[in-house]
Image (cartoon, rainbow, N blue to C red):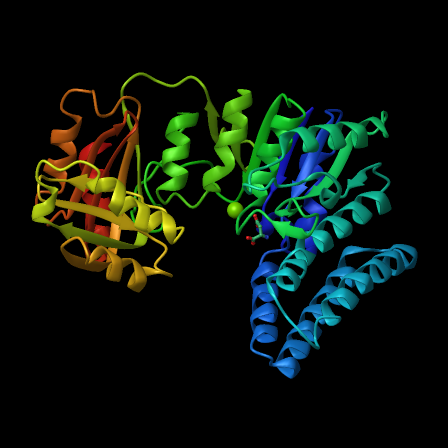
Length: 436
Ligand code: ASP
Ligand code: MG
């Protein structure tokens, strides 16, 4: 069995929905994971924020606009009255649910129900379309099997048990359609795997059923060696190891949800990135093997805040770093990069929700400097920190710009540098011409 995930643009219009069967209808048994139609989750986020703000009228208006958009999709997608009616009835259920929140108390619990509607709609439409054209497919409701545990991690035991049971109910079926992104939390409430989470869904499903492989279908031909939106000449990378792909996904390559690699890596299942627009292109194969010692790619992560704590108390002291880190832990704020000297520690965060409170507490330890609008530039490759000359090349390429932090040797696959965001483009271009 294979697991194939298609993102929002792959189901973004009736034309794209009609083109999808060419990629998924054949003799290979598979589970197809779909995102919401592109734009829909953003619309749902907007509706939820209007409801938070008690702007009932505006929310009702936004819901109505979305409903009209979907009515048009139904009209163009289906050719028979019978299926138009089936889809309209199913869609009405979704919109009735959306409208039910227009009045009264609104909390994160209701918001999550709203955010789940996009995937419920796209999968329902695609599945009905397949059935209308005579393809036998079965819709697997992700809300029945996809569950997170108390630590917010996928509950693999539960997922495996329920999913296996669901698949066994349809022994002759070759094509299952399910929702990405949506899940339930340990309380059984509707929840999600965070924005872009459909990739993660596919990977979790792949690991749960021990799939032959997981394919992430997107609108680019795999991981590129640099950001194609910032730099002119980039190429797609044929092979990456799980570790390299994780570093790239985490440090800014927008192509994959950062958690997506974990489940398939644990289960050692090959992960492919494929291009919907160019299905014959090789794409990127992510697996446990990799090419020996080479620089593979550069990625950038924006909106980074650097914090420096300088304190004489750090000299020869123990427990200092623990106390500093505890403050970040207390405010559930992850740290990305860290560098230390004998009298100072610099670190970076990207979630600044609690920045003021964190800084106030850090001031008990010494002087605190905060630099906003920074960018982490990550250079990823196999054993990059051990390969001769790699670091010299990297730093040589960036000799014209001030570097605020360097993180080297933390992982064998990554060297990270922090620069002001105004230098980002220049840094990516310089690295592109000097490294590849
Ligand atoms: N629809 C969700 C989002 O837009 C999940 C996904 O597309 O992966 O974030
Ligand atoms: Mg995505």
